[in-house]
Amino acid sequence: MKPLSSNSLFIGKVAKYLERIDSTNAFANNLLAKSNPIEGTVIYTDDQYAGRGQIGSKWESHIGKNIIMSVILFPKFLPIQNQFLLNQVVALAIYDLLKPFKFKSGHLAIKWPNDIYIGTKKIGGVLIENKLRGTSINATIIGIGLNINQREFAKDLPNPTALYLETGEEHALDVLLEGLCLSLERRYLQLKAGNESVLYKDYVHQLYGYEEWRFFTVVATGEELYGKIIGVAATGVIQIMTKDNILEFAFKEIQFIH
Ligand code: BTN
Image 1: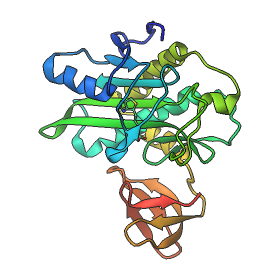
Image 2: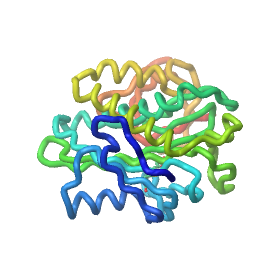
Image 3: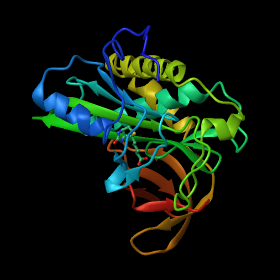
C-alpha cells in the first residue's frame, strides 16, 4: 500500500505501515503500553495474519486486498457509561465512506452494534478496545477491517462481501484509507463537540432492520421473536418492540433471521 497522505487534522497524521503483523490492534496495544503515541496515530498493514474479531473470533484478510487498520484515540472526555457512542462514531464513519457507491447486493446499513452490511452481507467489522481509568476512557484502540478488493472468502464465513464484488471494480486502498481517516475524524469531532443527538439519529436511521417488523432468535432459549428494532440504549443494548412488550438485548443475545 502507498504511504498515507492525510489531509486530516489529527487522524492519520502519524501513520505506521507494517508489511506484516499478527494484528494491528495488538500492535497498537503494545505501542500504547510502551510509548506515548500521539492521538490519531494509525497503524495499517497489507498482511495481517492473526486478525482479531469480536468476542474472540478471527478476522481473515487476503494480503494487499483490504483495509486493515487501527487508530489510537484518547476520548478522556467520554464517561464510561457512554462508551457505546464510540461504536456509533466508527460505524457511521465507515457508513459515510461507503455511502457514495452503488451496490449490487442491496443497500448499505449498520448492523447493530457496528457491523457494516450491504443487503444481507457483511463488508466490514469493527473491534474497539477501551482502556478505562476511573470513570472515563483513557484511551481507545479502534480496529477496522473493511473488505475492498478481495474476491474469494473462506467457505465457513457466513455472508462476506467486498467492495469489488459489490461494484465490479477494484478500488485504491490508499485513497479509501485516507477517506476513512477523514470520515472518522469528522464523526469523532461531532462526539467531542457534544453532538450526541446527531450521532444517535444518524446511527439509528442507518440501522439494519430499523423500525421493520422481523423475526429474531433469542440466543439463550432458541425461541423465535417477532418484533421491530425501535432504538439502542446509551449502554448499547438493542431495544426491540414486540406486540406486547419492549425488550432489551445485549450483544450476542439476539440474532437476526435474514
Ligand atoms: C468483527 O469481528 O466484526 C470485527 C473485526 C475487526 C477486524 C479489524 S482488522 C484491523 C484490526 N486488527 C485486528 O486484529 N482486528 C481489527
